[in-house]
Amino acid sequence: MRYLPLTDTDRQAMLATIGASSIDDLFIDVPAEARLPGPIAGLPAHASELAVERHMTRLARRNLSAGEAPFFLGCGAYRHHVPASVDHLIQRGEFLTSYTPYQPEIAQGTLQALFEFQTQVARLFGCDVANASMYDGSTACWEAITMARRVTKRGKAILSAGLHPHYVSLAKTMARFTGDLLDTALPTLTPGAPGDDMARLLAGIDADTSCVVVQNPNILGHVADLSELAARCHDKGALLIAVVTEPVALGAIRSPGEMGADIVVGEGQSIGVGLNFGGPYVGLFACNEKHVRQMPGRLCGVTTDADGQRGFVLTLSTREQHIRREKATSNICTNAGLCALAFSIHLTLLGETGLRNLAALNHAGAVAAAERLATLPGVELVNGAFFNEFTLKLPREARPVVRALADMGILGGVSLGRLYPDAADLANGLVVAVTETSTAEDVEALAQALEAEIAA
Image (cartoon, rainbow, N blue to C red; front, top):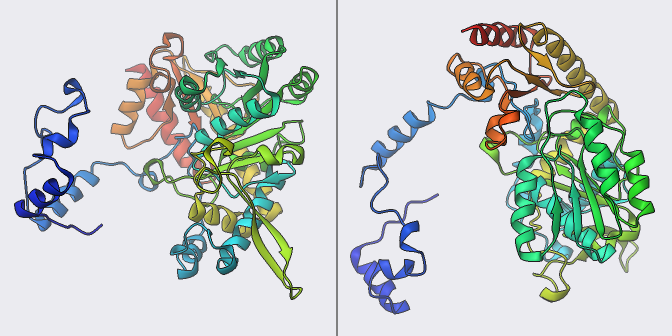
């Protein structure tokens, strides 16, 4: 970003134009207790460009990046190998500088890429139709809940205990303004807990339920069959929403659509998109054809023009930018176009066989790691079935253990105490993700360091 300094004269002219006497007037609506009393500690008041660059470089060097350490972080953001060809292709000028196709007749290349992306997502999720991407997985999840309310005319959503806590938090924030009732629960580290949560979901569906939201694999890595849950939802007139935060898993397990899910949403980051310190990512959204007109976002379709040539068009665009606000299905369904393109290119390069092989590599590596780590004194493997992510119950609180491992140069997993700071029963939980980028040497380094830290 360019640095554009303003002089005091510039500032006074701008303030005079808007009728403000000082910069402080711009913040009059912010409560005093929410304002900083002074400059942020540790930041100099001013510095030269060279000094700022050096300072920022020093700060950056304090980060332990995924590529320079044994890496076992997951919980919704995964490190996979992204071929160099993906970055090469998305940086072509036709794609990199392209914006949302508000003028479809001159954006045929972009629309075609999005159409192919939609086809891939629909097939991956086992659904009839997918949209042209969403902002991210968590907002896609909320959009699915509001879509279920529109379809069923009901206002209660039952959220699985295994749904990512960030997704739950976002849903709770949005429900404050919509009046939706959210039935939530916390996961447990008991080996039989997935069955208990499924029983809770099945028992909780009633005539007021708009949807049940379940993540598969869930936040602890458990994998479940959703068929019975889907049937119960349909018997009661509710919809089943399935959340997938690790789409690579669908190269090995049945798709949610095959198991009866009505809406499938998820995070597409693990295919084609790097970790990027948390974003930008890409939300995936698919559903059955009968509900397509209630689907948020934009949908690209293919048609034939007056000359008989194939053309791509925006078939549905039910955002408030396109239609009257009261008829819009969404106002947060930003299309993450470049990330969607990266997802589509990577999945194209893999193909069906490549995705299945990649999934097999992930699962085999995770099984080997789980077996090795479960041999450590005091460590218990919580999962019965998992894909590439599993949960360990440590003999003591996991959060300081993770910090100690990071100091040793090992990113050893995600502590449940960080995700659920108020749940003491989860404090000893450690979620470990193993992908094709995790070597046998990495797993052994984690095992040895974890054993030493637990014994300390």
